[in-house]
Amino acid sequence: MFEDHVADKSSMVELKDCLEAREFGTQRSRNIFNTIRAKTIKAERHGRDDLLVQRYFEEACAKALFNFGRPSAPYDPDAQFWIIPLAFQLAHKLNLSENLIVNLITQD
Image (cartoon, rainbow, N blue to C red):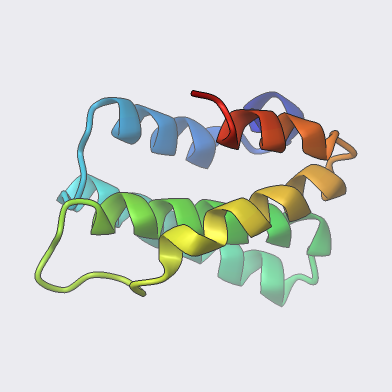
């Protein structure tokens, strides 16, 4: 949903590909998080508030993707519960309707 509205699509594309390949708990899913975390730190250091919500959303998605594989050393156990609130924040930041998110999470 957000991929067409952000300047840097690379992490979202990686997350989507990893999800579609069902690579839960794999080294690839861990590497995606590490890449996103490096981007988050860079955005924080450079005061890029315009990117931080996107990075936080991507981090939550990456952590959840990794944790779905039930690894022996998971990320924060509540990571998946941050996805929806951060999606709302990112939608707001991108001037997208919150109804888009509501419609996605209420689909059958």
